[in-house]
Length: 316
Image (cartoon, rainbow, N blue to C red):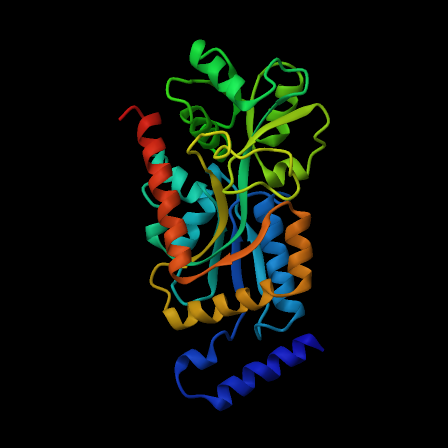
């Protein structure tokens, strides 16, 4: 029945005619997830596609394709090089800026059409419950007194590495020893097993993993997280440090704005459903969608911050 309704809607658009934009979309839209299934990006793509489909917000389905590899750059490159006709989209995250800033690829957000930003999640600094560091100031002062000795469990070049670098920068002179462990599946065991002392983790990762044995020292969001009301922000502790990331939604750079607007409008309406509110909360991210000036400002803030860190890590 849904398929029939979509077909009728598409025919109606064709008959109603007028500008070519009125006939868009006429075929399924391919949404590339540049990572494996099961993570936040994969889940965000899945629930967005479902909300759009279940509420008939587009007359065609969204087909999710997983193209993992190289921190998302393989799938992203496919979208960058796709025909800019509105039938290919991409969901990525801070790696969109990070990969370019680290010199891993020669393209970044400016090589795409930015559609929207969703799912804000800010980072936290965590240690073992048995750690000698009871507070964030204690940890940073120790990292300053004994630089490069406190091991930070990182995925080098990834979001948790960037967050860890920003955390140590909160106190001039503080410096962790950044060691490659990988993503959450590797960094939490390293922390709990005593192979590392500290880890920067996202709220979605923390919400999807048992926090038994972990102590959260500080939150890098603009205000306290409602699920962790007892955890102070870096700002509250006197540090001018903030690091949040979004799910960025892109289309090929030269995609006509009227077609981008159709896809964006469906996303905005999908976010206004109870289903999306429930699902974003379950993922441990903020229920938010950025468009227009607010979207561009958030992207520029991230780009500036990540570019500076990338240059430093490359030794420039």
